[in-house]
Structure formats: structure tokens, C-alpha cells
Image (cartoon, rainbow, N blue to C red; front, side, top):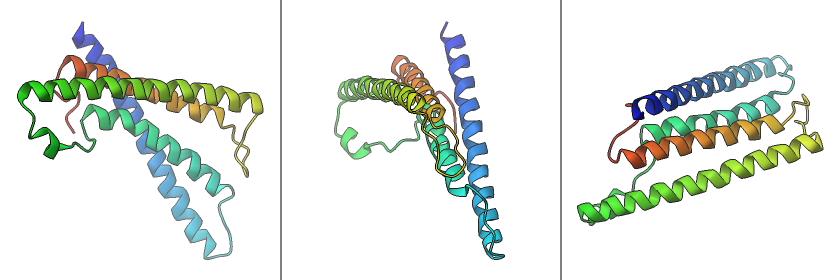
Length: 162
């Protein structure tokens, strides 16, 4: 069962990381194009809107990958002083707290996205609806929870090698 779980979650992580990469390339392209066009007194219409949306997506969609490879900052100097049992207990507690934190973030993101949908909130220049960005963030946070659950069941293992 863990094999299928890992395969499914790994596929989701890679998919979201790929989309985050495309968003980053979009940010680079839009910003670079806008800089070049400004030399000719032109600009990319809605560049700020696009970069804001793509930046948000890039950030939240890269979180599952960073969690899967354990790429977050670790407090090694604190854990060095713990016994093996203390490290396991501390790691387990932080994983549970992380899952609770990301569950709260996901719930609030879905709820706020629903509020944005009801208010018909849009970006200022291009009128891009904003609700879906929060829903994508909520989904990404749910994938982080799945990754943390894997790490909880398999302590010391990375889900994906960087």
C-alpha cells in the first residue's frame, strides 16, 4: 500500500513542481519583456497582475517538493544535543504540528477563495479572477500534508531525492 501511496504523492509533487517551474519561467519572461519594452516607452499590459499571480503560484506549488526533499531549514544545532529517542519524539511532534498548520492553511485558503468568488474579486488591470489562486494554494497545502504523513510513517527518509 505504501508503494502506491508514495507513487501517487510523488506524482502530485512532481506535477506541482513542474507547474511552479513554468510559473517561474513566466515571471522571468514577463519581467524581461517589460524591461526591454520600457526602453521603447512601451510596457506589458498587466505585467504586475501576471507577476503577482504567477509569483503566488510559484511559491505555493513549490512547497510540496521542498517538503518531499526535506529542503527546509533544519535546526541541527538543537537536535545534536538530543538523544536518538529525543530526536524521534521531536521529529514526530514537529511533523504533527506541521500537518496541523498546513491543514489550517488549506482550510483557510479554500474558505478565503470561496469568499473571493462570492465578492467577484479580480486583479486590478487584467481582471483575472483571484478565487482559484487560493484554491490552488489550498490544494498544494493538502499535498504538503500527504508528504508530511509519508515522512511521519518513514522517519529519516526523503520522499524524493533532490
